[in-house]
Length: 152
Picture 1 (cartoon, one colour):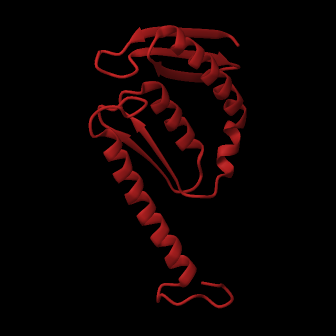
Picture 2 (picture 1 turned 135 degrees about the horizontal axis):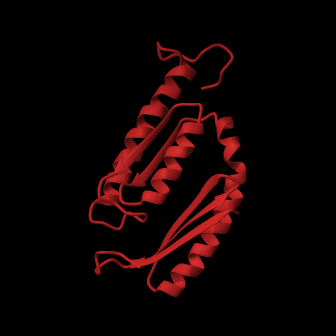
């Protein structure tokens, strides 16, 4: 590790259920490893950040394996979650199959803002509807009849 930056703070909206925010960026052999968490108290946020960083460091080693993913992939992230948004952009660049990055405007990491989870659900439903329909069309052929040798 060459560099580490940790930032502790409070969410601008005091009405949020988890106003304490902890963020960290580590430079590990030239690759950034980022994490962000929200909690009720700053000490809880620090503990959660440590746990998240351990997970991120483990996943950083798996990064090159993203190119092996064969399924269409949907990434959904809040626009105000800068750390995770950047991680998702990096992951999308490594994925080889159909991939979409949907950004929920004004949403933070846990989509706690009014209507944010409804937008996430709508995005996911549209994605699955599109991709399950196209998978079924490929499996059954365009005429709607199963291809020879493939069970329905």
